[in-house]
Length: 160
Image (cartoon, rainbow, N blue to C red; front, side, top):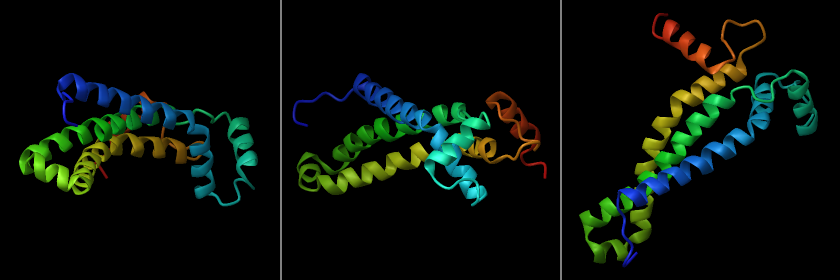
């Protein structure tokens, strides 16, 4: 870390890289996530992954919950990777260069934990939305589209 410059541009690049890495990979495996959620809801849903994916495809659910997955995990990656780098530098300044180098594994762990708290807070509302969409049974009142799902939350949350 000797001569590296960690400025806003560096942190921004880490945030964008994390956002792309997490958001795109999680969005790409939405069909597997849908199958897993259906299997958790009903243990008889499928006999295995191939059977489960076939059923998800046959039901037209290959992209069910993709939008909140993409948004949520993009935000989580942004927080996880970007804030991790920021916290490493902040904590290094607090304890000093010599102590930071001497105890870098502890510093990295504390920075990682701090970043993960922010990342998970960014993810939580989107993951909850995704799960509501994926776990709703046909004919239920919860809408499968992101905009309609958010409107449903706004109209019903906290009023029960």
